[in-house]
Structures are given as structure tokens and as C-alpha cells.
Length: 131
Length: 177
Image (cartoon, rainbow over all chains, first blue to last red; front, side):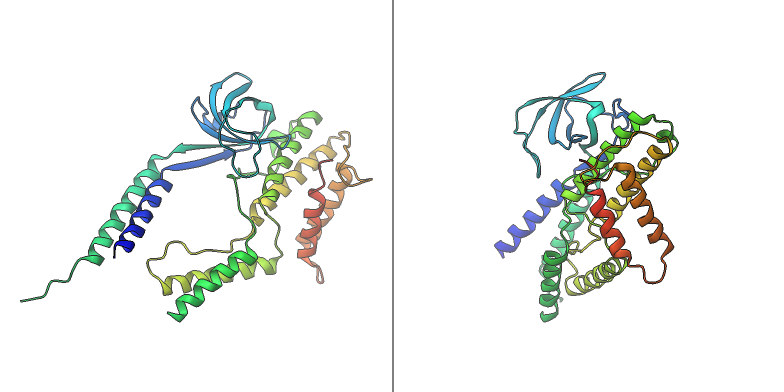
């Protein structure tokens, strides 16, 4: 019984965590800043350059023709170690993905968690004997 | 219980044997070249081709591939069947494992963007660039790709669309020298 409870707790935590972020990706057509993503300092992004380099960064500065950042833990297929200062000219970006907290997903996740918890409570509630 | 076990075995076996496409990053929409790209000069067209090719390379590295019409239909049928079976076996189960379409749609979009950019390059009589295929330039590759796509569209009797798509993948994998 306690094992079941632990499993349900893990499921609830996973649901709550996975519902909070959203990814958006673009492939810039021109060589300017990819304004459609409204990148800003502090954003976590993943980049593929036209030279086929892949990296994960946290942006530290948005400049007129390039962005500066610090590499974070490399994702699959990435080789740049964490903690390196990186400058990427906008003209070199073939693909940029930004991960941000998503208010809609967070709200939806919370509702899902509450509904799941309510369902569990109902399912595990002892049946009361009638008079 | 037997039904549930069988479903689980089918799902896992299908996933391990058929689904090789594991996206490691969100893919952007890659539309065919339009009025914006039509206004590009040759240098900017080459730049746009490099960028689209890099995105396509990521898809291929993630395992995306073009499927034949038969393979696509089989996957759709299998996905519907396993979803129904999984739902019937376990109402509380989250999303069942699906085979998906191996990244066919996004890769096909990337291919068509590249071909449309190469067409613009040819229309503007831009200088040809080498590819990784010995003796074939990018514009010669465009001619071959355009023929493959035309054959695929015409669907003449006896045409093996799967083979045409396999050849398209083979060529575009070698676009960059």
C-alpha cells in the first residue's frame, strides 16, 4: 500500500514538473536578431549554427549583431562543456530553441494534478457500510 | 490480464524495433521558399541553404527518415490499434507509446525547402557549389531531386515511392561537401 502511495507521489511530481515549460524554435531567415522569440538575458536556449555546431546556453547579453551567453550542461549530441563564455553572431544561427515557463501549461498541469489527486482520493476512499 | 501483458509487449517491442526517431530539440517550421527568399541574391541564397541544411542534418542525426506510403499507413494503423488496446487494457494509463512517423513530415518539409531554395539558385544562375558526391554540384543535385519529386508526384504505375524517397534522402545527406 505504501509502495502504491510512493508511485502516485512520483507520478504527481512528474506531472507537475513537466507541465511548466514550453519550447519554441525558429530557423531565422535573415541575419538579424530572431525577434519572434523575444530573446532576453536569462533565457535558456539551444542553438544549432549553420556550421553544424550544437550548444545549450544561458543568455547573458543581447547585442545588436550577436548574443552572448554561458554554456550549460550539454544536451544529447552537444560537446561544448558547461561554464564556457560563448558569443554567437545572429548570422550564424540556423536553429534556436528557447525554453520558458509557460503560464498556460503550468495552469493546465496544476488542474491535472488536482483532478488526479481527487480521483485517487475517491478511488481509495473506504466504502461506508449502509445502515 | 493476458490482454494487458500482450499489449505491453507489443508496445515495447514495436517501440524498440520501429521507432528510431528521437528528437533532441524542437524543430522549427521550414516552409518552402517564398517571396522573401526570391528577393535574395546568390550569397544570401547559399546562406539560407546552409541554414536549412543544418536543421535537416539535426533531424537526420535524431533519426528522422522518409517513409514509403505503405510504411506510413502501417504506422498509423498500428498506433490507432495500440492506443485502443492500451486504453481498453488500462484506463488509467497515460499516453501509450506510439510508433509515430519517424520524423517523415518534418524531414519532408526540410527537403522541400532545400529543393525550393536550390531552384531559386538555379533560376538566378548562381555559381554552382560542390557537394559531398564526387562529380556532382549542388545544381546538378537539384536537377536530380526535381526529377525524383516530379516522379513522386506523378505516381506513375510501377513507381516505387519508397525508393524515390530513399534516393532523395541519400542525395540530400550529401549536399554539404
